[in-house]
Structures are given as structure tokens and as C-alpha cells.
Length: 237
Image: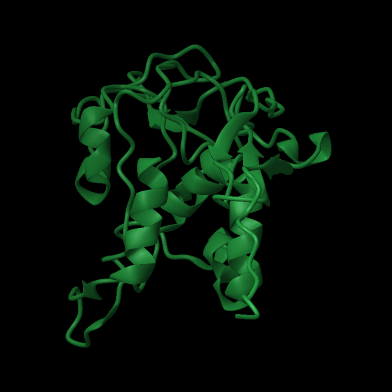
């Protein structure tokens, strides 16, 4: 859920981009947008739909194509979400692989990848342009959509770089967890309502898989009965 908090804070306190002489509001990085749409938006669709119904102008939040890349373009100070190392690292390709953090380190033709921090046999400035590569060892990457899919410099001095052969991620359809009581009876007497909910996290959808909305609603309202309410009447005396 820290991704959600990150995005919520961005819209509440957007911050200032001071990378140029003209101060501007920080924009949301394309890489962060793609990460959120891939891993979070499907399971949170009911909440997101409710939010958009209240604030329709915020739909641009999920239009990743118009957002700037990290440390590039006219908005180098865009807001970037740092994935934590504890997150699952799948050795599969989703979309263009800009969010690929797996451990494949061999090109499609079978050549071992050169470490991103090494300058031999091929000199480059990629790890200076994209600092996140300093921790990527010699794994295939596609920083800021610099290629059509993950790639690397090779250890063959006759072949500067090459794409990696990474299998595509299998879409995972979402499924609901068990119902749980979200809100107790909302009255102290008479008839009221209590709320039951279920989450789309068993498993959560990912890699373009179907979200849980086709399986029914994620909230139910049930009638609840409390003790009879005291009679309210005025005495004639």
C-alpha cells in the first residue's frame, strides 16, 4: 500500500521542480505511473472509480503515455517511486519491460551481459544517466524505455549491445478473498445496516490480468437489528 500513499501524497503535496530557472510543479514519472497501473490499479478499481466519479479531472493520473520519463526530457525532476528490494522480481516481460527487475543476464544470442558499472569492453554513460543501473549488476534492463525491450551491453567486444530474450509475463486474473465485516451496525436501536467487504487480493491481478469486477461487487450491505427504540410520545398531562 505504500505505492498508494506515495501517489496520494503527490496530489496533496506535489512539490516543486527546481531543475530549471523557472520553478514548476513536479510531474509524476512515467515509470512510476506504469508500475502503479500494472501492480495496483486493477485491485483498487472500485476505490479508483469512486474517486474519479468525485474528481473526474484526475483521470489523467493513469494516462502514462503523456508523463515524462525519469531524469529525461523537459521534466528531470519528476516524482519517482522507488521499488523496494522486497518486492517480487519476476523473470518475465510485461509490456516494454521498463519495469523489469529480474535476473536474466544473457542476450538473445547467448552472450553474457557486461556489468552496468563496468567500462570494458564497451564504454558508456548509462549508469550516470540512469543511477538505478548502479545496482543492476549485469542484468538486462530497459531504463526509461531506451529500447523496445530489456537489453544490455555485451561482453563481446565485437557486439556493443543486444536485446535479451525474456519470456512474456503470464497474465494473472484477480480473485476475491473472503468477506469480512467492515462496519458494525450503524444504529444503537431499531433497524440499521452493517457493511461487509472483500478484497481483490487472492491473488491480486497483475500483468494485465482480469480484475475482480466481473466476479461481482466487493461490498455488501446487510440489515441489522438492535433493541427496540424507546417510544417517543408526548404526555397529554
